Length: 313
Image (cartoon, rainbow, N blue to C red; front, side):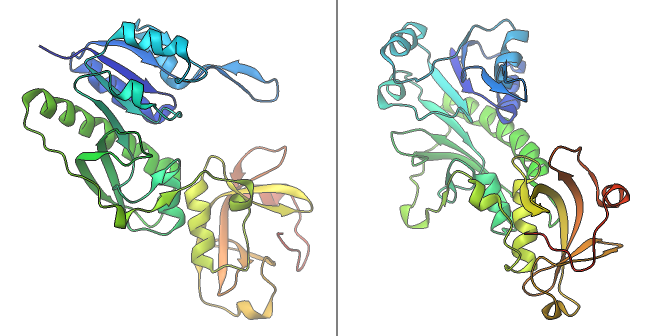
């Protein structure tokens, strides 16, 4: 008999995990997600992606402000799931909830734990220039991504891959691995492996300071930051005091970068618009100026004149 599952998740990343459980006939009795949030210039309330996916399947949806609140705790006890499957939910789950499902709470985490515990593992694997990452299915405990590992799958990171690309790949990998873990728990064929805390690294929340490009860094470090933040929230610099988000770029080490100050704008080349970095150049290819649409750099320059030795700050 298949276990009754409560699914917890919020953004697009979680949708493949929900869909794969439903496709394989697992009874998802409820979906728990974050409240609707205001977005855009009009600050209109927008439902989470997982809520919309659940409603298409007619699954009851609950959106607690805080899962720790007494009202939600009582609701969760009434739901009485055999198992919880969680992917990118967005709140810390208290031990009182973790202890309820007899088959445990499974978390789809997009890193090779214990590396990149925390809120932004995909971003930081790219920002740090890693050449591989993966997905972990973890049996949750009261710590932050410290639970026992059930399954892991590794994947190489393409040197030109940006956050959006890697996010989508890992969300699909995570769904497939979650299904294997659920099947293994039911069959009693899956084992638990404790994480080695000595190998733990962290992936903290992104901030405006992190997102602001420092042109005094190496060209590779700048490009990796751009890759890790593309397309949301986006790495940025200031052009004439207006925010310029940069979504794609490549690094170039050749040339005489020392003749120009970091951030100096050069010529439009085949690789992109040349910007001086500490040890070479960054060639930006895809941008969005504050108040304008996103566009390739050559299109942008058709309507925006760059003056000699102008800089990005």
